[in-house]
Image 1 (cartoon, rainbow, N blue to C red):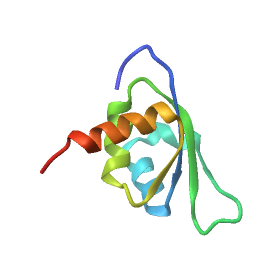
Image 2 (image 1 turned 90 degrees about the vertical axis):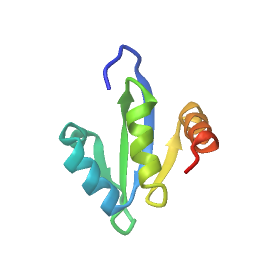
Image 3 (image 1 turned 180 degrees about the horizontal axis):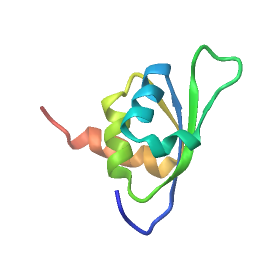
Length: 86
C-alpha cells in the first residue's frame, strides 16, 4: 500500500506464514529472519505505510502470527475484529 507514513511493525511468524509472506510479497524477504532456538519461527520487522495490507495478512493467518509491536497496530487489528461480521 502506498503512502508517506512509516509505521513500525514487528511480527513473529510460523513457518507457513513466512512462506506465504515471501510468496505474496518478495520484497519482504530482506526483513525476515529465523528466530534462534525456535522450531521454524521467523521474525518480520519493518515499516509499512498503512496497516490495511499487513492487517489483512495478519487477520488471515491469525493463528500463525503473533504481533509483537506496536500497540497502535494491535489496536487497529482489534478494531477490525470488533467491526467485521460474517
